[in-house]
Amino acid sequence: MKKRILNWTKPAFICLLCAVMLCEIGLTAFAESEGEVMLSNLAGQSGAYELNPITGEFEATMHPEFFDMEPEDVPPSGIFPEEIEPRSESAVVDDREPVYYPSGTSGTTCRIAGRYGSGTYDLNKGTGWLLNKQFLLTSAHVVYRYGVGPCSHVGIYVGASGENHYKEYRLGHVVAYSKTFEEAKNMVSYDDFKNWHEETGIFEDWAVVKLDKPVSLDYVYLGREAANGFSDVKGHTYYTQGYPQDLNSDVTYWPNAVMYKSSGTFTGPFTRQKVPVVKSTFYASHGQSGSPIYWFNANKKGWYADGILAGGYDGATCVVLINSWLLSEINYILRSNL
Image (cartoon, rainbow, N blue to C red):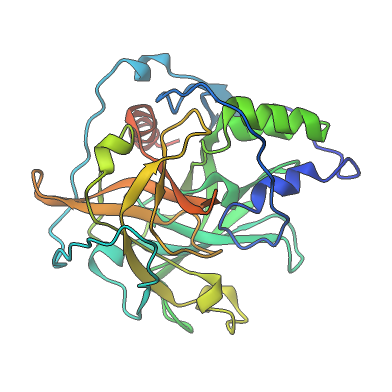
């Protein structure tokens, strides 16, 4: 499949979007205009791009059957030792604490970077987490650049925290990502981009990465369940961990960043989008894009990931929820072993 490459001599509108994201790229903020947007809970309304393993090309897919089906929850692969620590604060509190020896719910979190070239600035650094021995979930904007496409490969340090401290290293490649990213790449003017942004939202921000070689150690993987909107996540304490740039400012080699864990609650829906995105009290920084957002589901008696930390917007840290369509898509990708 041929892909159109954006002419970077055009107005640099595309950079404006990425500033609100939390991968480590320094760009300018996008000022949002007034107006209402029709909302929808169909996170897959734009479909996806999936890698065809035979041709090696990405192909547009929709899977309309996912819209009406009830997705299967994926329970945790084992029992985690963590205790529940309820949080009552509704305000943003910086409670980030270092995790020097990741294990349990933090054991499958990875320091990752998408490689786009050989230069220092040809890396997008962020966070992801293992879904099983060979697949990882993260934010699309970490592993996809507008005007370029998917990165050439992804460097993955499993359970990394601190200098030369990680469990395993793997290379990986993107096998699926939100179709909205490909649509935005074809914008040729700032007005086109702004109109597209207002009509579709920017937060179908997910990507699946396949490790070139499965991990060899045994891990306990977070469960996955569908969360279709604010009503599904309000009133619960959630947790996340990742690699905040502001707390790793003295780190010169990106894999040596220290992992930090924090908690938060959800405060309401993000109103300018067509996918289920919610505002939260998580205190976050660049480098945490793609971090898992998870909680202890007492009814299911396990730790489940409900979302992906996406970026800062409208003064809040926003989270992309893993809704019914996206959960079905992820399950399909893992079953198909793309």
